[in-house]
Image 1 (spheres, rainbow, N blue to C red):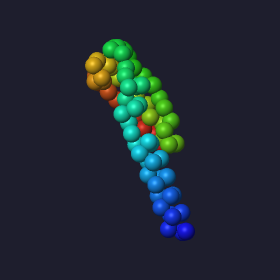
Image 2 (image 1 turned 60 degrees about the horizontal axis):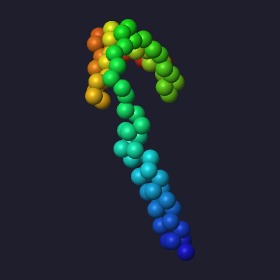
Image 3 (image 1 turned 180 degrees about the vertical axis):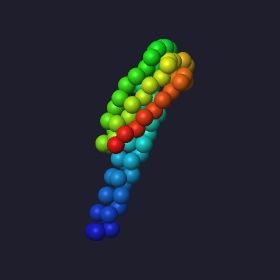
Length: 76
């Protein structure tokens, strides 16, 4: 009985990991339009660290994102 319970839990964890790590389904939702942004400047807090990102310009074209003169500052 214990072996069946451990096997069931292992299968359940495997299914959750497969669904969580399957990035292909999110790739279609995240497709960005072709766009150019000038004087990009934003800050985010990620895991108690503040990320401040500046770029002279950034563009998204055919799924590729390029930034020029990119500065990243991380503070705790």
